Image (cartoon, rainbow over all chains, first blue to last red; front, side, top):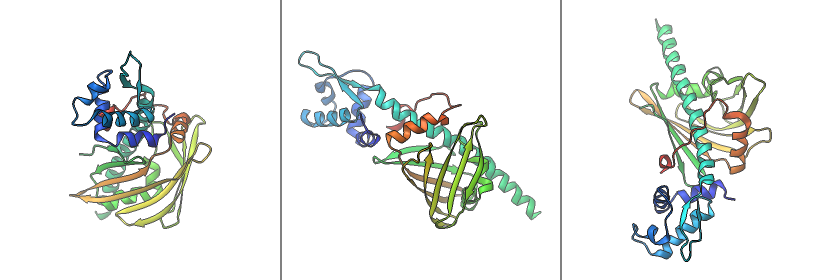
Length: 112
Length: 154
Protein backbone atom coordinates (compact mmCIF):
# COMPACT_ATOMS: atom_id res chain seq x y z
CA UNK A 1 0.00 0.00 0.00
CA UNK A 2 1.59 3.26 -1.03
CA UNK A 3 0.84 6.68 0.40
CA UNK A 4 0.31 9.66 -1.83
CA UNK A 5 3.37 11.30 -0.27
CA UNK A 6 5.57 8.38 -1.28
CA UNK A 7 4.13 8.55 -4.77
CA UNK A 8 4.86 12.22 -5.21
CA UNK A 9 8.33 11.92 -3.67
CA UNK A 10 9.03 9.20 -6.18
CA UNK A 11 7.85 11.44 -9.03
CA UNK A 12 9.92 14.40 -7.83
CA UNK A 13 13.13 13.04 -9.36
CA UNK A 14 13.88 13.51 -13.10
CA UNK A 15 15.66 10.14 -13.48
CA UNK A 16 12.68 8.34 -11.99
CA UNK A 17 10.29 10.21 -14.28
CA UNK A 18 12.46 9.21 -17.25
CA UNK A 19 12.33 5.58 -16.06
CA UNK A 20 8.53 5.78 -15.87
CA UNK A 21 8.38 7.31 -19.34
CA UNK A 22 10.50 4.41 -20.63
CA UNK A 23 8.29 1.86 -18.85
CA UNK A 24 5.19 3.50 -20.29
CA UNK A 25 6.37 2.04 -23.61
CA UNK A 26 6.59 -1.46 -22.13
CA UNK A 27 8.36 -3.81 -19.77
CA UNK A 28 12.17 -3.47 -19.44
CA UNK A 29 15.03 -5.14 -17.62
CA UNK A 30 17.36 -3.28 -15.23
CA UNK A 31 20.08 -3.44 -17.87
CA UNK A 32 17.80 -1.90 -20.51
CA UNK A 33 16.75 0.79 -18.04
CA UNK A 34 20.38 1.59 -17.14
CA UNK A 35 21.53 2.03 -20.77
CA UNK A 36 20.19 5.55 -21.49
CA UNK A 37 21.58 7.01 -18.25
CA UNK A 38 25.12 7.88 -17.23
CA UNK A 39 24.62 5.96 -14.04
CA UNK A 40 25.67 2.67 -12.55
CA UNK A 41 23.29 -0.25 -12.37
CA UNK A 42 23.14 -0.08 -8.53
CA UNK A 43 22.14 3.60 -8.78
CA UNK A 44 19.33 2.73 -11.19
CA UNK A 45 18.32 -0.17 -8.95
CA UNK A 46 18.01 2.28 -6.08
CA UNK A 47 15.65 4.47 -8.15
CA UNK A 48 13.67 1.36 -9.10
CA UNK A 49 13.29 0.48 -5.44
CA UNK A 50 11.86 3.94 -4.66
CA UNK A 51 9.39 3.57 -7.54
CA UNK A 52 8.46 0.09 -6.37
CA UNK A 53 7.96 1.16 -2.75
CA UNK A 54 5.71 3.96 -3.99
CA UNK A 55 3.59 1.38 -5.82
CA UNK A 56 4.32 2.91 -9.23
CA UNK A 57 6.11 -0.09 -10.75
CA UNK A 58 6.11 -3.84 -10.24
CA UNK A 59 8.66 -6.55 -11.02
CA UNK A 60 8.26 -9.99 -12.54
CA UNK A 61 10.57 -13.00 -12.26
CA UNK A 62 11.85 -14.27 -15.61
CA UNK A 63 14.74 -16.71 -15.06
CA UNK A 64 17.57 -14.60 -13.70
CA UNK A 65 15.98 -11.38 -14.92
CA UNK A 66 13.55 -9.14 -13.01
CA UNK A 67 11.82 -7.06 -15.66
CA UNK A 68 9.89 -4.02 -14.39
CA UNK A 69 6.66 -2.58 -15.69
CA UNK A 70 4.25 0.20 -14.67
CA UNK A 71 1.77 -0.58 -11.92
CA UNK A 72 -1.42 0.93 -13.30
CA UNK A 73 -3.41 1.18 -10.09
CA UNK A 74 -1.04 3.49 -8.23
CA UNK A 75 -0.73 5.92 -11.08
CA UNK A 76 -4.40 5.94 -11.99
CA UNK A 77 -5.64 6.55 -8.43
CA UNK A 78 -3.48 9.66 -8.18
CA UNK A 79 -4.36 10.74 -11.72
CA UNK A 80 -8.02 10.39 -10.94
CA UNK A 81 -7.84 12.75 -8.00
CA UNK A 82 -5.74 15.33 -9.85
CA UNK A 83 -8.06 15.07 -12.84
CA UNK A 84 -11.05 15.70 -10.57
CA UNK A 85 -9.38 18.73 -9.01
CA UNK A 86 -8.38 20.09 -12.42
CA UNK A 87 -11.88 19.74 -13.85
CA UNK A 88 -13.55 21.31 -10.82
CA UNK A 89 -11.12 24.25 -10.92
CA UNK A 90 -11.48 24.68 -14.69
CA UNK A 91 -15.27 24.95 -14.33
CA UNK A 92 -14.94 27.30 -11.34
CA UNK A 93 -12.52 29.65 -13.07
CA UNK A 94 -14.50 29.70 -16.32
CA UNK A 95 -17.44 30.87 -14.21
CA UNK A 96 -15.18 33.36 -12.41
CA UNK A 97 -14.23 34.85 -15.82
CA UNK A 98 -17.94 35.61 -16.31
CA UNK A 99 -18.34 37.03 -12.79
CA UNK A 100 -15.35 39.31 -13.40
CA UNK A 101 -16.76 40.43 -16.76
CA UNK A 102 -20.07 41.28 -15.06
CA UNK A 103 -18.26 43.21 -12.30
CA UNK A 104 -16.50 45.26 -14.99
CA UNK A 105 -19.84 45.97 -16.75
CA UNK A 106 -21.42 47.07 -13.44
CA UNK A 107 -18.50 49.40 -12.81
CA UNK A 108 -18.89 51.01 -16.22
CA UNK A 109 -22.64 51.33 -15.58
CA UNK A 110 -22.03 53.10 -12.25
CA UNK A 111 -19.68 55.68 -13.67
CA UNK A 112 -22.09 56.67 -16.44
CA UNK B 1 -3.51 32.73 -21.96
CA UNK B 2 -6.13 31.91 -19.36
CA UNK B 3 -5.17 28.25 -19.29
CA UNK B 4 -5.10 26.57 -15.92
CA UNK B 5 -1.86 24.94 -14.82
CA UNK B 6 -1.76 22.42 -12.03
CA UNK B 7 1.55 21.08 -10.83
CA UNK B 8 2.75 19.10 -7.87
CA UNK B 9 5.52 20.65 -5.80
CA UNK B 10 7.67 18.41 -3.64
CA UNK B 11 5.69 15.63 -2.09
CA UNK B 12 2.92 17.51 -0.34
CA UNK B 13 1.81 20.46 -2.45
CA UNK B 14 -0.25 21.29 -5.50
CA UNK B 15 0.35 24.63 -7.18
CA UNK B 16 -2.40 25.99 -9.40
CA UNK B 17 -2.02 29.05 -11.63
CA UNK B 18 -4.61 30.82 -13.76
CA UNK B 19 -4.68 34.16 -15.54
CA UNK B 20 -7.71 36.41 -15.44
CA UNK B 21 -8.51 39.40 -17.65
CA UNK B 22 -9.50 41.54 -14.64
CA UNK B 23 -7.11 43.43 -12.32
CA UNK B 24 -6.01 41.96 -8.92
CA UNK B 25 -8.51 44.08 -6.99
CA UNK B 26 -11.46 42.51 -8.82
CA UNK B 27 -10.12 38.93 -8.59
CA UNK B 28 -9.40 39.41 -4.88
CA UNK B 29 -12.93 40.76 -4.32
CA UNK B 30 -14.39 37.75 -6.14
CA UNK B 31 -12.63 35.55 -3.55
CA UNK B 32 -13.68 37.55 -0.48
CA UNK B 33 -17.25 38.74 -1.18
CA UNK B 34 -19.65 35.87 -0.37
CA UNK B 35 -22.22 37.09 -2.93
CA UNK B 36 -19.55 36.76 -5.63
CA UNK B 37 -17.99 33.51 -4.33
CA UNK B 38 -21.44 31.91 -4.42
CA UNK B 39 -21.63 32.53 -8.17
CA UNK B 40 -18.53 30.64 -9.23
CA UNK B 41 -17.05 28.32 -6.59
CA UNK B 42 -19.41 25.49 -7.45
CA UNK B 43 -17.39 22.62 -8.86
CA UNK B 44 -19.16 20.37 -11.34
CA UNK B 45 -22.16 21.44 -13.42
CA UNK B 46 -25.45 21.25 -11.53
CA UNK B 47 -24.09 22.04 -8.06
CA UNK B 48 -25.07 25.14 -6.06
CA UNK B 49 -23.80 26.78 -2.87
CA UNK B 50 -26.87 27.54 -0.73
CA UNK B 51 -24.74 28.63 2.25
CA UNK B 52 -21.70 30.86 1.78
CA UNK B 53 -20.07 32.42 4.83
CA UNK B 54 -16.84 34.23 4.04
CA UNK B 55 -15.65 36.61 6.79
CA UNK B 56 -12.66 38.11 5.02
CA UNK B 57 -10.63 39.31 8.00
CA UNK B 58 -7.87 37.73 10.06
CA UNK B 59 -9.44 34.92 12.11
CA UNK B 60 -12.67 35.23 10.12
CA UNK B 61 -14.68 32.09 9.42
CA UNK B 62 -15.38 30.30 6.18
CA UNK B 63 -18.28 27.94 5.65
CA UNK B 64 -19.36 26.75 2.22
CA UNK B 65 -22.22 24.28 1.77
CA UNK B 66 -22.72 22.66 -1.58
CA UNK B 67 -25.78 20.84 -2.87
CA UNK B 68 -26.30 18.77 -5.99
CA UNK B 69 -30.04 19.51 -5.92
CA UNK B 70 -30.82 15.82 -5.46
CA UNK B 71 -30.35 15.59 -1.71
CA UNK B 72 -26.60 15.19 -2.00
CA UNK B 73 -24.13 17.62 -0.57
CA UNK B 74 -21.19 18.31 1.66
CA UNK B 75 -19.63 21.27 3.37
CA UNK B 76 -16.31 22.89 4.04
CA UNK B 77 -15.24 25.00 7.01
CA UNK B 78 -12.15 27.13 7.42
CA UNK B 79 -10.52 30.23 8.85
CA UNK B 80 -8.66 33.15 7.36
CA UNK B 81 -5.08 33.46 8.63
CA UNK B 82 -3.75 36.43 6.67
CA UNK B 83 -5.24 38.88 4.20
CA UNK B 84 -3.30 41.47 2.21
CA UNK B 85 -5.73 43.33 -0.03
CA UNK B 86 -5.50 42.86 -3.00
CA UNK B 87 -2.48 40.63 -3.32
CA UNK B 88 -2.59 37.67 -0.94
CA UNK B 89 -4.91 35.42 1.08
CA UNK B 90 -3.82 32.66 3.45
CA UNK B 91 -6.46 30.38 4.88
CA UNK B 92 -7.00 26.85 6.12
CA UNK B 93 -9.95 24.70 5.12
CA UNK B 94 -11.24 21.20 5.67
CA UNK B 95 -13.98 19.17 4.01
CA UNK B 96 -16.61 17.38 6.06
CA UNK B 97 -17.27 14.08 4.32
CA UNK B 98 -18.84 13.87 6.93
CA UNK B 99 -15.69 13.38 9.04
CA UNK B 100 -13.41 16.39 8.74
CA UNK B 101 -10.38 15.91 6.49
CA UNK B 102 -6.97 17.14 7.73
CA UNK B 103 -6.52 20.90 7.39
CA UNK B 104 -5.53 22.10 3.95
CA UNK B 105 -3.35 25.23 4.20
CA UNK B 106 -3.82 27.42 1.13
CA UNK B 107 -1.93 30.51 0.05
CA UNK B 108 -3.46 32.44 -2.83
CA UNK B 109 -1.52 35.23 -4.53
CA UNK B 110 -2.86 37.79 -6.99
CA UNK B 111 -0.16 39.39 -9.12
CA UNK B 112 -0.81 42.11 -11.70
CA UNK B 113 0.00 40.97 -15.22
CA UNK B 114 -0.54 43.75 -17.73
CA UNK B 115 -4.20 44.70 -17.33
CA UNK B 116 -4.98 41.28 -15.85
CA UNK B 117 -4.03 39.08 -12.94
CA UNK B 118 -2.03 35.92 -12.52
CA UNK B 119 -3.42 33.99 -9.60
CA UNK B 120 -1.24 31.38 -7.90
CA UNK B 121 -2.76 29.03 -5.36
CA UNK B 122 -0.50 26.76 -3.32
CA UNK B 123 -2.35 24.06 -1.46
CA UNK B 124 -1.54 20.95 0.55
CA UNK B 125 -2.17 17.62 -1.08
CA UNK B 126 -4.69 15.52 0.79
CA UNK B 127 -3.53 12.10 1.97
CA UNK B 128 -4.64 8.99 0.13
CA UNK B 129 -7.53 8.33 2.51
CA UNK B 130 -8.90 11.85 2.13
CA UNK B 131 -8.60 11.65 -1.63
CA UNK B 132 -10.56 8.43 -1.69
CA UNK B 133 -13.27 9.96 0.50
CA UNK B 134 -13.48 13.01 -1.76
CA UNK B 135 -13.83 10.85 -4.84
CA UNK B 136 -16.51 8.81 -3.10
CA UNK B 137 -18.73 11.73 -2.00
CA UNK B 138 -20.09 12.14 -5.48
CA UNK B 139 -17.95 15.16 -6.22
CA UNK B 140 -17.02 13.34 -9.37
CA UNK B 141 -20.65 12.98 -10.48
CA UNK B 142 -21.17 14.69 -13.77
CA UNK B 143 -17.49 14.43 -14.49
CA UNK B 144 -16.66 11.80 -17.01
CA UNK B 145 -13.73 9.68 -15.90
CA UNK B 146 -10.87 11.24 -17.71
CA UNK B 147 -7.36 10.74 -16.60
CA UNK B 148 -4.58 13.23 -16.54
CA UNK B 149 -1.96 11.51 -18.62
CA UNK B 150 1.24 10.74 -16.78
CA UNK B 151 3.10 12.85 -19.33
CA UNK B 152 1.03 15.80 -18.15
CA UNK B 153 2.75 15.66 -14.78
CA UNK B 154 6.19 14.97 -16.26
